Length: 89
Image 1 (cartoon, rainbow, N blue to C red):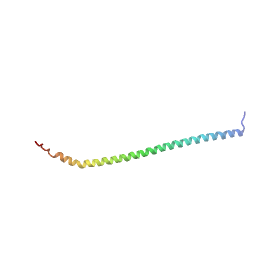
Image 2 (spheres, rainbow, N blue to C red):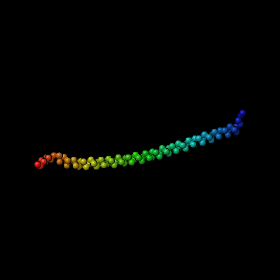
Image 3 (cartoon, rainbow, N blue to C red):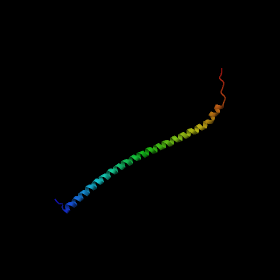
Image 4 (tube, rainbow, N blue to C red):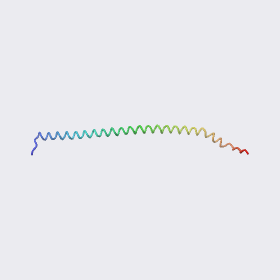
C-alpha cells in the first residue's frame, strides 16, 4: 500500500507536533527543577549569611574577652609578686 503525498505530509506534521510537545514538556520539567534548585540555593545562602554573622559576633566577643584578660594580667602579676602572709596562730 502506497501513501499519497498528502498522507506523507500529514504524517510528518503529526510527527513534528508530537516531538514539539514532548520537547516543550521536557523544558517545563527542567524549569521546575531549576526553580527548585534555585530555591534551595537561596535557603542555603540565608543559612550561610546567618552563620557568618554568628561567627563575626563570636569573634568580637573573643576579642573583648582577650582585651579584658590583658587589662587584668598586670594586676594578677602584681599580686603574684607580693609575699605571702604568715598565718595567725
